[in-house]
Length: 248
Length: 215
Image 1 (cartoon, each protein chain N blue to C red):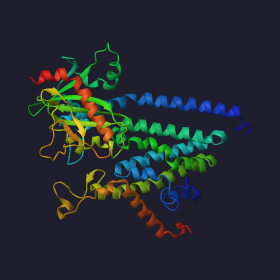
Image 2 (cartoon, chains in turn green, red; image 1 turned 90 degrees about the horizontal axis):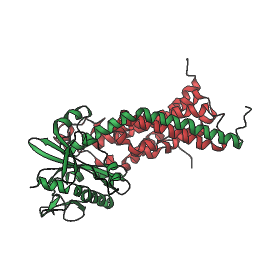
Image 3 (cartoon, each protein chain N blue to C red; image 1 turned 180 degrees about the vertical axis):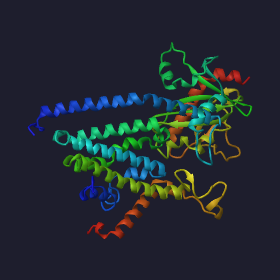
Image 4 (cartoon, chains in turn green, yellow; image 1 turned 45 degrees about the horizontal axis):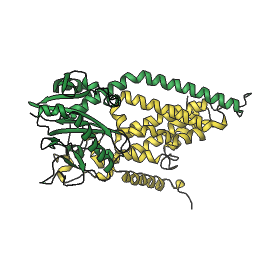
């Protein structure tokens, strides 16, 4: 080999070429798979929304979404209306579930921007569900979820997910025992918006005089729990003006 | 025999058993503990590692004469990282649920000591074909252990294999559960993976005394 692989010039040239080649290869792969990944995310969103209103294939203790191939049909069957809420005004929009909550929250930092809030109306067994998406901060990264309310604004079901909470601690927000505990909670107290607080208090689901608007916290995950409380308080409150009109 | 000489065969066979990266070299333990609660996830992890290791070994081996020695570790890292990202993207596109389940662990393939170890110790000094076999062998050895551990953990922990309930229904009390059998939830936690692994190492060493170190 005549090349001197030890020289500095060669090392720098090699590094530059390597970065360029690997970089363009990865960009190519990412571009060509982008559509498929976006489609998967869309399906997951539909599954999450349906999960919150109780359309799922849950078995004892496990979280099972409705299957991928059924989800499109189920979504058009159970989700009868989709709205974009702005204040008191709700406009129907059958693509509302595609609204990116994260981007909307970014845009809403400008005071001039009226945030678009998606709301889904589901119907199952002659019962109406109002499904509200929420998004907030956990301990390490984003947490989000979907809250299904009935017309009396009682929680009928929730789904939570997270990006990077500690597995086994904060990561348990997507476990059945935590999500199921939200069912039956009110988000209004004495006619005023209250939200749902995750805390260690008199909130054990088995307790007979369990406090309303409270959910038992997860052991070892206080900060993720606080994140969930804050997420529900802040994001559900944005829907308050509209939800109040339902309650009358 | 055509493609595989005796020496080549040894490259594949050795790491499967007598020089297994997990049980003998004790590398790659972290992912072996984390990802073995279910058989399906373990198999996908094993296949992903096999892809990264075999392809990475070949690429490194092809480049072994042009990689500047000063930055060879960085060059290896870049190649491993690129392959891992490709695996991650492909899983996201074609097996989304699985990729959610494997979550951070796919990204962590790059930190798997087996990969950098084989790049550095083998691929930098051998021809592409030999490096390819070495990659298949080592990833295979890693995969075998992963699958064995996952088999016992899923069977005893959840009473299922590949998600199919083979021991009957624990809720309706059919099959084995009718006789009062219960799933052992402890099997699903990381400590039991370590203990299962320990038992495998014990069995292997008791059958092959040449593996026992003298102290």
